[in-house]
Image 1 (tube, rainbow, N blue to C red):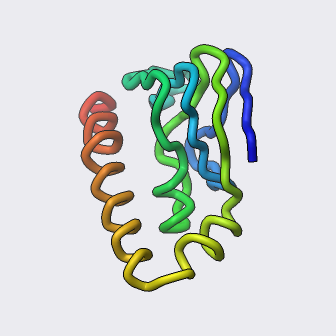
Image 2 (tube, rainbow, N blue to C red):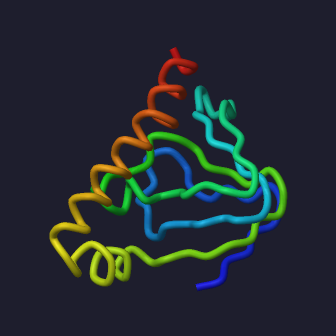
Length: 118
């Protein structure tokens, strides 16, 4: 589904459930964390990144805050479609996607943000 979000939109808050996977190919979005109701953004991605693939794939809640820094355009896949049409189609593809999503999330997002949060 086509997706467009305006500047300053909070896509996902900490402990929210991921209901879709975002694929933004235009715009800038940030990832950060919240302490005492104040958000601190550590990572900024421009014109490319996937949001929510880890949360939807492994059915976990968000550890971090995701927000648009500028207007963002791209596509999204709803959680049910991601699971039924992509992951459940083939066991070989499912294991490759799960491994890739987990490694990317832990390397490029989780490790960096938890380090900054401490």
